Image (cartoon, rainbow, N blue to C red):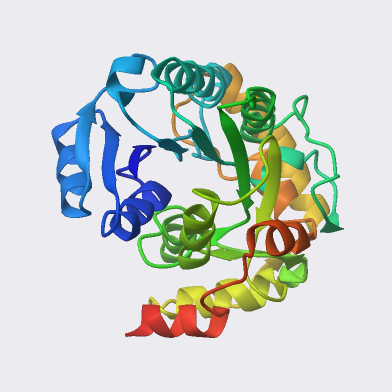
Amino acid sequence: MKIFVTGGSGFVGGAAIKSLSAKHEILAMSRSENSDAKIIANGGVPIRCDLGTVTHEHLEDCDAVIHAAAYVKEWGRWETYEEINVQGTHNILNAAKAAGVKRFIHIGTESALFLGQDLIDVDEEYPLAPYSEYPYSSTKAKAEQAVIAANQDGFLTVALRPRMIWGEGDETILKVVTNMAKSGKFTWIDEGKYLTSTTHIDNLVHAITLSLTKGAGGEAYFIIDDDNISFREFLTQYLATQNIDLGTKSSPSWMVKMLASIVEPIWRFSAIQSPPPITKFTAHIMSAHGTLIDNKARAVMGYKPVISRANGFAKLNQ
């Protein structure tokens, strides 16, 4: 199979290329020589374009697209989230259809459902939140809506929704929390008591592989590890793999949310490019339960985790 990957130099896209290139021909969107090197190292062929310039010619003869590119940073202009996550998804969808691609796999997120509320044992019937006040949630919801709506005969679209992707190569959760801990800025929220589902990168790549041939078109699927865990237990064990102790400092959620509601508008009004001490999105998502049900992926795609959380931590300790 000939597969085109967006976000190929990133965490998810890179892991997908590394796994799939053993059996498939992989082309990957690349915007720089640095990205070229990462893609080549994982077994792919870099194609110089981005989500604003991609055309059907870049996807010539491809059977499938894995759309893993997104603006996932905790801080940025609303326009940047819209341009990359929404318009970029429309662009790659249009290019794929024009190129005659048969299958389109979108890497979504449970954050596309988030309005600041608890998500407790939710399944795929739970509504998306395109009007969320959080730019990442809003734009990822709009992107998924576009993907699902594009499904048609001859062009099958699937959305995979992981939560808190972690493991080897993680430059988001691990990097952010590590930096906070080293600078003395890390604090638990309400003692880190909130429960969460997580998704090890190996389990997500397994689901991506399955979705190349399985899954109903125009549908979304939660992809998660076995069992839920508290933020405190997960992050403590995750950061321990890097020999980092997160300590016991804790702040009440009401105070963290209030601080975020004050500083974020100031940062946006002042057009400060560096992130504020805490964003509203981070304050609220770390102050809410986020547990998901993956029965649909198991029943329709035959998904089940290929690595346990304990073994995932063990791999990082090696």
